[in-house]
Amino acid sequence: MMPKDPFILLSYVNTQLRDHYPSLDDLCRSLDADREQLASALASIGYAYEPGQNQFV
Image (cartoon, rainbow, N blue to C red):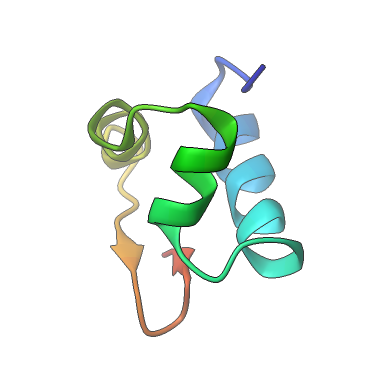
């Protein structure tokens, strides 16, 4: 289960992307997460996914 707090979610997702997944799509498929909801939650605190860096910045 993914964290609900957006700041904890940011840390969790970026760590997962760094350590286990080559892309956000792979992470979402593996964890059965909705990409749009995830991106929206992190956009609410000013972060967007950067595919070239494979992280939210």
